[in-house]
Amino acid sequence: MRKELTAKGKATRNRIIEGAAEVLREKDVSVATLDDVMARTHTSKSQLFHYFPEGKDELLLAVAHHEADQVLEDQQPYLGCLDSWEAWQRWRDVVVERYEEQGERCPMGSLVLHLGRSTPGARDVVVTLMRQWQASLATGIRALQTAGHLPADLDVEHRAAALLAGLQGGVAILQSTGQADHLRAALDLGIEDLRRAAAA
Image (cartoon, rainbow, N blue to C red; front, top):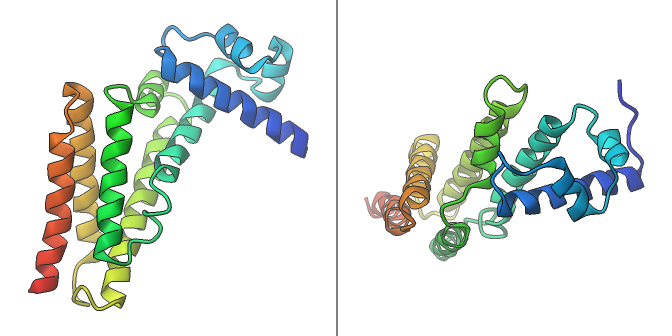
């Protein structure tokens, strides 16, 4: 059982994770090395293995968790406050801007693919992210219900799931083609569908 890290130890571990994330945004995970991470974070090999005793895969899994957290963080404060149609539009714009800037590379996706299903916890990174993302969208839809913008009998989870599925499909096409048109269309039609439910 590992000892709980001190505040300084946690800060150092986080610094290594953030540095590794920067490296993996510049280099493919298959060619990035621990030496690259050590150079970026100014840490020694013994220090790196102190925080990640199982080596590269443990570090990559930590970076995958970091990138998953960043996906949601990049959508704030809008994702956490979807209580008006204006807020939904701002959230839509932030999502499109984020993925246009990211382009064809997906750091988290590459990490999870590299680690594979055989690495304990790798699949859980994506499952947890999607669960949290859908829950945030569902919370936003319920906020519209509370404000009287949507009918109370609307199937919230179904709508949130459809929005997330459309968004993810748009992101996948953007990463394959470099074009954000499908992402824009998926978000625009998803929000428009909610507006139609309000009008009905």
